[in-house]
Image (cartoon, rainbow, N blue to C red; front, top):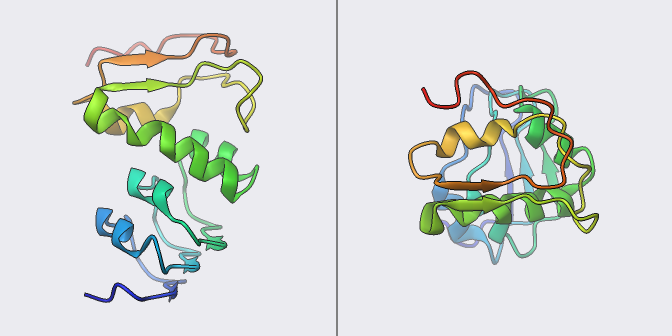
Length: 139
């Protein structure tokens, strides 16, 4: 195990996902570079990073909701990922917007929900600006 890594740079590769094991580096990882790869979502374990200061993922085809919160900064992304980290254990995610969240209200269903479709039982999107429920919600 390389549990003392503080910097990982994987720019210009063909990486498609970040492994859940990244959580084991929560006390040491300060820099994670994944520019120009194929990462579209992040594992919930990313939300537990204690010292991550640099997170470069530009030019990846990120899901729209992930891009929206990441554009507001790393703190915003980590807060959003903490919301999703509860799905595995509780089967629910609370994204109710009361003006207290770091990101703007959602205008569409968060695409991250499709990655948790097998375990997600409850999604709370009260007080957002969602305009429609996707046609394929039950597929």
